Length: 283
Image (cartoon, helix red, strand yellow):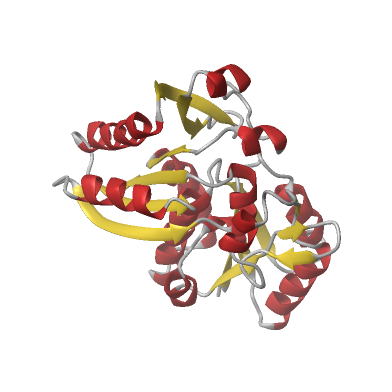
């Protein structure tokens, strides 16, 4: 009989009740300052990161090999036969290689690592669907085969307050930088599922228009699709609440959740002012 473990990382922004419900194992990124180091979502808050950005922009690091080893050793000791790992987009991180390396030390656990080509609750919603399938008794192979179709049902867009931090972190991908800043151009950013990197889906001038455009994009998708919706923010609570309230009124929103802050490690790369929209199509 299969005993399937479900693993993701701390950038998935999954609420604790969901993590507990589906017994999801979390690998934690690290945030490194010159004289101190923190574990994402464990001993550092998003507010701490934002409050200190003017003094120092820290670097981020993958979950430690030691943490991965301890997790797989624990799974083996608990009798898990299989593991499904859903990670942050491979276009933004090297976590896939780290997990693959460690999982090979545990051949008794058949492990499948899936690149979500997404971030935050985009990644999290794929994990949630896997949890539902495990709960229903789906087999390892059934879940693995379904992952690409889950990804196709996902829509994620976000805006940031400034492109400064995406530029400094080298994660700007195909998003226009300096000239856009000078002209107060606010790109609507999405992730290219071909390479998992950010690209400019659309661009408008000014913050207010960028938030309105996010709502418009949502409503256009919801014209033909019934979707679950989640809104998250990075030090932009009031703007996020407004977008949330505007989108949730759409009759094709089947459920709406306000996810709150994105993870500290994601926040240090996006900087303050992020508002993110995630829609997941219902079957």
